[in-house]
Structures are given as C-alpha cells and as structure tokens.
Image (tube, rainbow, N blue to C red; front, side, top):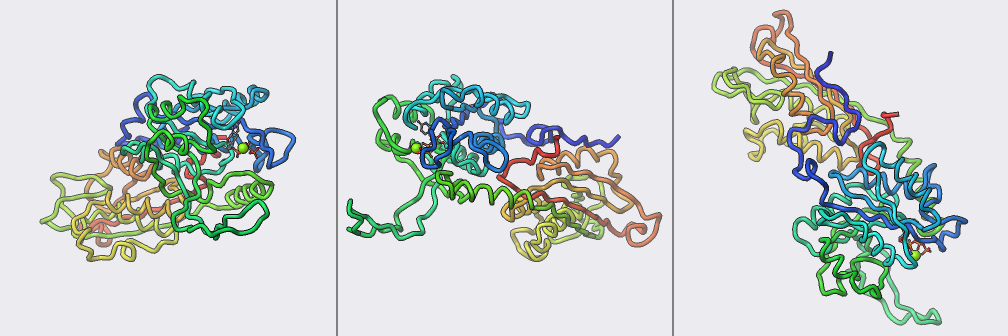
Amino acid sequence: MPPFAFPTRPQSGFPLTRLPPDMTDAPDVAVIVVAAGSGSRLGRDMPKAFVDVGGRPMLERALESVFGMREAAQVIVVAPDAQLPVAQQIAVKAAAGGEVPDVVAGGATRQDSVRLGLAALREDIGIVLVHDAARALTPSAQFDAVVDAVRAGAAGVVPGLDVVDTIKRIDSEGRIVGTVDRSDLSAVQTPQGFPRRILEEANADASATATDDAAIVAAAGYTVRVIAGDPLAFKITTAWDLRRAHLQLRDWSDATPKVGTGFDVHSFDDNAELWLAGLHWPGEQGLSGHSDGDAGSHAICDALLAAAGLGDVGSVFGTSDPRFSDAHGEVFLREVVRLVRLAGFRVGNVSLQLVGNRPKIDPRRTEAENLLSGILEAPVSVSATTTDGLGFAGRGEGVAAIATALLVPLTRGRPDLSWES
Ligand code: CTP
Ligand code: MG
C-alpha cells in the first residue's frame, strides 16, 4: 500500500504542511459573478452568459476560474430572471461536488445586478470581488492577486492592462479633436475587489451608475488601485472575442504534459548537519555542498526545470551565489515552482529516489512526502535503495538522488480536474 494516496480533489486532498489560515475557516471572501446581461453586442438568440464557449456555457467557464482560487469563497451568481433554473444547473456542475454557488436574479443594469448580488452576502464575508461572467477565461491567479491586494489594505483593487493603441477623442462627426496621452491610461478588467463595507457604502445610493464597480467606489471618495491584469481576462463582447476564446481553448486542449529527470550527488561531510528530501536528520552524517547539500531537493529542482525547458539548478541559481550559501532545499524548490508556473505549468507529480546506505528513509518517508508535496502542491513520492555495496554509494561516500517530474500545462491557473472523470 503506497503511503501517498492520490487526492480526489487537488485543492483539499494534499497533505499540505502549511495551510493558509483562511483555508481552514469559513470563507471571508465572496465572489459575485454578474451574468445577467443580454449580450446585445454579441447578438445571439440567448443571453450572453449561456452562449457556448468551446463546448460549455460561458458562465460555467467563468465559474471554473472562480473555483480555481487558492482559498474557498462564497460564490454568488447573478443571472437573468428567465434563466435562473439553467444558471442553477450550471452552478451545480461547476461546483463539482463542492459548495454550490447561490444564484439570484439580476436587474436592468450591471450595477443593479451587482446590488442584487450584494444582498446575498453571508454575514461573515469581509472582502467582496465582483466579476463579469463575460471575462470567462480569467486566470484564477488574478482572483488571488486581487484578494491579496485588498487584504493588504487597499480600499479597492482593479486589474488593468496598459493601453497599447493610440487613443483619439472624436466629435459626433467622427473628426479627431485630440489625442489622449495613453501613458496614464489603464484598460481595466475584473474581478474588482473591495472591503465589503466600502462596496456596500458606495452602492447605498441606488441611483449611482457606472460600467464598473471601481467607478462607484471612487465616486464615494475612496482611492482604487490598479494591479497588473492578464490578457486572458479579456471581455467576450463581440463575435470576434468569442472566436478568440474558442481558439484559446483549442490551444490549451492541444497542450501536452512535459516530463523531466534530475540527478544529484553530494559526498558525506563529518562537519555538516544532514538535510535530505527537505528534512533535517539530527545525528546523521551530513552532506557537503555550497547549499545544505540536499541532493534530493536538488534532483527534484533539476527534474522540474528540465521538464519546463528552463535549464538546471546550476544555470538558474549558479553554484556560488552567496544568497544560496547554506540555503535549504525548500528555498530552491519554492523558487523553481514559481519559475515553472511562469513558464505555464503546474506540477503534476514527482517521484524521488534516494540512493545510499544512510540515512534509513523508511521511518520518515511519509514525513518527507508530506513536506515535499506541500511545497510543490502536488503528490511527491519518495523511495530509497542501496547499491548492494557497489560504487560510491555502496562504500558510504555519499548520497545520490534521482527524480522524475511531470508538469501539466496551466489553463487558467486552476487545478486540472479532468482526471477525476
Ligand atoms: N450584466 C449584468 N446585468 C446587467 C447587465 C450586465 O449582470 N443588467 C453583466 C453581464 O452579464 C456581463 C457583465 O455584466 O457579465 C459585463 O457586461 P457586458 O459585457 O456589457 O455584457 P452585456 O450587458 O450582457 O452585453 P451588451 O452590453 O453587449 O448587451
Ligand atoms: Mg452591457
């Protein structure tokens, strides 16, 4: 029986060693997904949020991103009155066995719909994100970044992109009357996040109207900040946008997993403490190295970097950088995971084998697997072998480590749940 059982739900199943505090408590974040518009510019015979995007309704795509958030949230879907039953079905499907979003009826304008969503907030919610279902491919990481910025004390946070086109001001005849300086413009997206109290206060005046929540909150006298948005959070407004979404989804479905291998050896050093597979081994002979000599962690880093096509530990970190002298394996692993994500992957799983006479791995195998799985946010299995007395490992001169890593292409930064079915 292997000590690591593959989880049924990646977000909750890992033996994470350090859960963020809010993952264990009732959520204090809510996401209101507004989906009650008609989609007049898209011009389909159904409200926009129910239009097919690569085989699934736009609303379902949008909710997948929400459910990929790092922490649990209360999710409120605001749908057209006539579509409440189908919105409810989509909500159940997107929840995939988790907590089903609340579904409420929307209003005549976007801001009316937001207000109707606000009315469904649970008492313990402190932070509210408002998201357009029309931004159906928004990466989950964008939600996390907005939550982080609100938690850091902002009165309002909005993702935005630099404007690349030259923008002209025109009159009703189409004549150019001026050029707008684009250097101080931002094309803003959703989710837009606020402390609940501020968003409710700004919406207390039911006549306040705007095309986004930041404008309402700014009009109430608060400073709203822009953080870096993502081109994937584009709003599906026209037929061309819908085509772009289809092409993007096809691109993702074509992406294949990547495998990588890593190998490392460190020799024993009587004057060093032993760090191996991320763990400290008191009383064991240590390993030499510029860092802590953790051959296991280094082999995993090499496997991950190789799978992502990013080189190896030496080329990424150097072999003499003073920042990494005596650094523990965890430091390298966390940085490699960050680089791998930037390259467009999450870790699927990792297998690590340690080769040597000592330390005996078995008594602490589960501990090592739990630690490494927590760092990589993916299953890590650790095995060990001797070499029947042969070679440097057999003579007790050092420890070797071999790792294999599988990387899965990120779609929207959400865990890939397709293997569940
Ligand atoms: N929205 C809403 N209630 C409204 C109007 C809009 O919940 N009364 C939502 C839309 O469903 C969308 C988001 O607000 O997710 C942004 O609006 P937009 O892209 O303008 O969508 P529509 O209003 O549906 O489209 P159009 O303006 O082309 O009719
Ligand atoms: Mg609209």
